Each structure stands twice: as structure tokens, then as C-alpha cells.
Length: 102
Image (cartoon, rainbow, N blue to C red; front, side, top):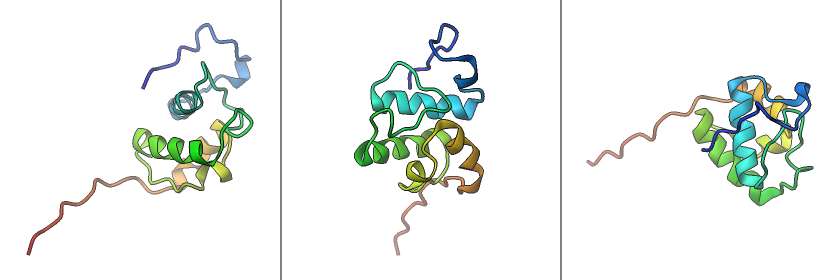
């Protein structure tokens, strides 16, 4: 994942992602939506997101954030800030258990 530099951002100061979690979400969204930057109050769907891109974003976010996110997460929490605040409510991902042979 390419880290976005907010040092010379065109975002208003109050819209710059302020936590590591918000920055990680914004980076994934920017990547999926092919944008230079995403603000903490930007709505995924207002930025051009749709159900297929939401599925891709959730899959990437689940890996990046180590949480089991349902595909519905972006529909329930469509901004970077709201999704970041909702993350503690989602279970931590567990590595796939190895398949045991009998």
C-alpha cells in the first residue's frame, strides 16, 4: 500500500485523517477509487464508490486492519471517520486454521 503524504494536502485541516486507523482506511479508499487523497469526512459513495468497489475496499481493509469486516460495513459506515470509530465493534481477524487430515 502506498502511504499518502498529508504534509502538502489540499484537504482542510479538519478533514485530514487524524489517526493511524483513519489514515489506513483513507489509503485503501484512495487506492480502490483511484484518488490522490481521501478526507476523514468523505463519503465512499459520494467519491464514486459502488457495490463492487465497496467489496474490494472491505476485502483490503480486512487485511490492512486485521478485522473481520462484513461487506455491509461501508454501507453502514460510509465515511473514513465513522468506519474508524466502528472498528472496535468488529472481531479481530484470526488466521485461517490449518486443515487437519484424518
